[in-house]
Image (tube, rainbow, N blue to C red; front, top):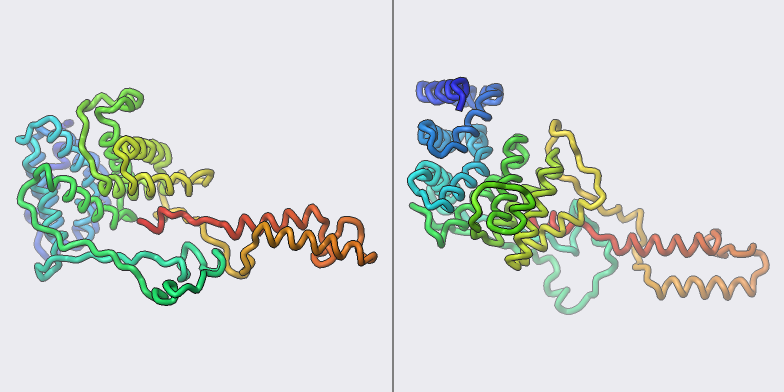
Amino acid sequence: MLAMDQGVVEEWLSEFKTLPETAVSSYAASLKDKGSLVPALYKVIRENYSDLLEPVCHQLFEFYRSGEPRLQRFTLQFLPELVWSYLLVTAARDPHCSGCIEALLLGIYNLEIVDKDGQSKVLSFTIPSLSKPSVYHEPSSIGSLALTEGALANHGLSRVVYSGPHLQRETFTAQNRFEVLTFLLLCYNASLSYMSSSSLQSLCQLSSRVSICGYPRQQVRRYKGISSRLMVTSEFLVQLITGIHFALCNGEVELGSRALDDVLYRAQLELFPEALLVGNAIKSSLHGASLKANKEGTRSIQVEITPTASRISRNAVTSLSIRGHRWKRHGESHTSSGCGDGVHPLMGHSSTSNIAYHLKLVCISNFKWPLSLMLT
């Protein structure tokens, strides 16, 4: 580590200790102007034997415990690098180097699972219903739904999925390791729009390394880190894919595409259906899309919106209805002499154009929206 970077980190450590409580908000706003601080902190985290690692982890935890949203997001941007450093040391079976990182990760986890009153949080998520309109689709675009007894009984009901309450953890074990890390990635993904490009790059690198270490693809990627396999869970990979999707749509096309391929590679080897479903859905939705290469500007996720109801037919167009139109056209062509050769008596188009028109309606009626965006 260069002396200049070390000086930047030491100055950052000292100035927060002497900061009065009334100046915390203005200090948090000024952190974005310290351009050399974030790269220097990344170097400290990557050097497991650095003398600055322990005070840096302690201060990052103080930032998170302060409750100031901007300070919390400042800490969260280093989460992918912290997770990788922890997994790297764990795989090397050198727990003495990971003590401060482990304490920081557990501290953030224990703060996030409770509310301001110290009560356990219960997270809820309402699964979108195809019968109700959303930003992704309109019910009329998928044809009329069968009014069965079961459909009428469930009309207006929404399925809600709950997560929690989560148990407090004092130490990492083989049983709870990825439960904690998955929850931390969930917290990270909730603030994705605030994350810097360096943080998104770190997330993509974490995803690739975790997925390929110890497998033949590691040689293809020419990664010379650890060669032992890291155990993962399907839920952990799903959270990685969620972050990769955001990175892909916000300037990290090359790293994001590689990371998505690597995670799908690992999901196929492990036969994880959830990760395969979400990953392949995202890959299909981005196929042929023009992804934003610019890393500046508004952060967003690219969505292909379903056409509005006025642009599509409310009646499902099938092969039977197309044949019906064709038979009707032939029947009227024999009885009517006022229509020109090859002109449909109702539509006023040539027969070839008319069939192409109906085929286009078939494609629109079978329009599919990105499934991954409904699962995330």
